[in-house]
Length: 173
Image (tube, rainbow, N blue to C red; front, side):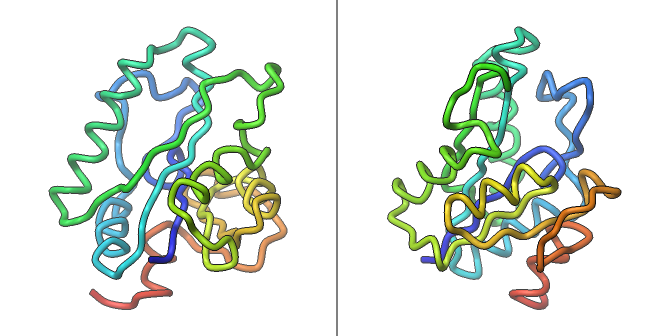
């Protein structure tokens, strides 16, 4: 099955400069959960790869992150879909880890765990970091403007949001 890797904040849910610190602050972008369900029904494996430095910064705990992801998973399942895996980096940018995007560590872990062909894999993100990570991992980058609408990123495939991207590859419904 082909693999689609999604960034979380700005692609699936609304992002915040103050961080998403609880499941109550986590709000999906209109159409994103339905788009994930559509990918699942269309035969794709869907995983999330997300930087979550709020953990290392002490803004929220691993338990809170798990609660946020449980809410996200439940809402996708209620729409007939599934998220097959979630990969996150808990480190601050200055920690020099290999998993924090724009480094490709999270994507490489997802590719290995799902035995996916990078040439057949897509990374959907909302920032240059996501595009750089995708290219470094050998996967196709796709930019959505739902998280950072003014971002200028050199990438061939750009869409307004995740729903528009999924519609482009799968059509209706």
